[in-house]
Image 1 (cartoon, one colour):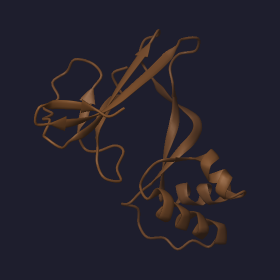
Image 2 (tube, one colour):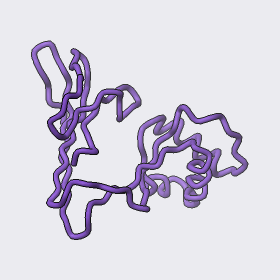
Image 3 (cartoon, helix red, strand yellow):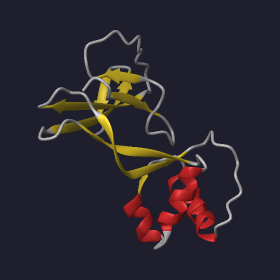
Image 4 (cartoon, one colour):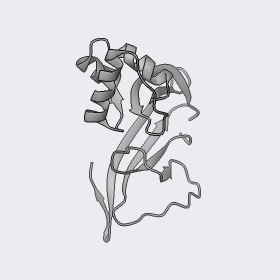
Amino acid sequence: IPELSGHSIEKWQVHGGKEIPNVAAPSGITFEEGDVFALECFASTGTGNISRSPYCYIYEYNLSADRVPFRGKITRKVMGWIGNKKKTLPFSSRELRQEFRTGQFAIRELTNTGKLYQHYVLREQKGVYVSQYEHTFLVTAKGIEQLT
């Protein structure tokens, strides 16, 4: 699936600035000692063309969003939970519901104001199979060390 790729991982950033293409293509990427990468392989029995579904279950705090005051008490509590527990790491709506019964209202306010990125479920054409496999590795002076 050419639109998806592996990526570097940085402190509090699952998706760092360097990408590893899933198909043969010049990328200009350089691997430096100490870099950590997630090598994500995606395969499909279909065409490999993906689209965004209307479903979203994964969210991530947007550091670059403007500062916005929140009216809802639950929204302020959810923002505190994100700041203390997740920082900029992705989290699921299920995880949020375990902490806050009415957290979906806060999610709506936070996404509407741009404070949260939404990671939508991706889909291929109907009736095909898509798989993902991921390994995380550290670049060392001697090569790579597989972490997962």
